[in-house]
Length: 361
Image (cartoon, rainbow, N blue to C red; front, side, top):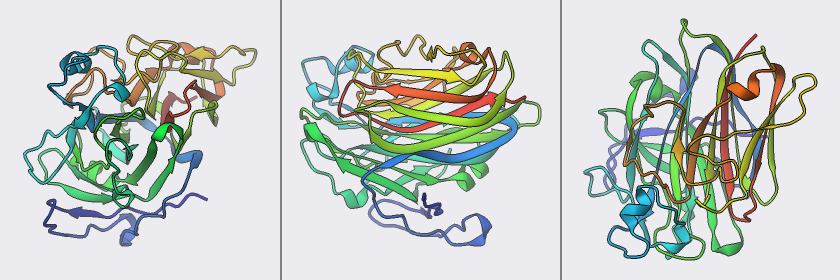
């Protein structure tokens, strides 16, 4: 059974914490994080039927070290094919706080007049590269809302395990609805994601994604769902979302969070099947940023010509994927369920979260 504990948010500066407890929804104080588990099967985290949709902000916490010769780090960041296991990796750190060792920013772009109804922050990566990071720090990060100061977030769900090829992977997550509802759109900064730097065959990788459900009366009635878990993709991962009831010609989007996907190594695919009568062949989810056979290709992408802002905005995120796909073609026949199937040919890749927003009948 999944624990549903509320996170503790505390105003903080790293090294010297100035704490101010924030009450969780319902008036109860936030609980401590749940114990770390070896694996977590995918399960539904959130579901709603409302006028509105879902958006996400995401960024990597680590990249190649600038100044390394082969391959050229600036070229890799600009999109050149490369894998993290071939590079000396170092932290992304965009803030001006000398006490944080990594930090990156990304934009939550809510439609004007929208209100956040649920928000969840996911973070994770590899703890074992040239160094071994302490697992005790997996369950906490710092987050700053647009124009705000860092607050400490403690995970309410935490998983991790060692696998072959030397990786020690984890993902943590926490409910941050109150913060996002009060802060709204803008650039959020997430710091102190506990990932290891350096160079090894396992590679260094990690990042964060903030998923936000919102309501807005002027938008279509949609069914929203968020699923999460954490396990290796040595075999196919299937997520079946039932009782959706979407009409023919419906529109929708889906977002995927995954770890340790390498650009240029094919064998990864994400397909979608619906419950439409007579429809059997799955639709491969692909776009200009995500090839049909390389969906885990180290990208943070979304439909549209003006993607949400990121700082930094590297094209190759070297092992961190947070992609949003347009489901229009797959949804045209209508149906009553969605079945996503993620396949990877590698023995050291992980899926962390999947969210969908589709028109309702």
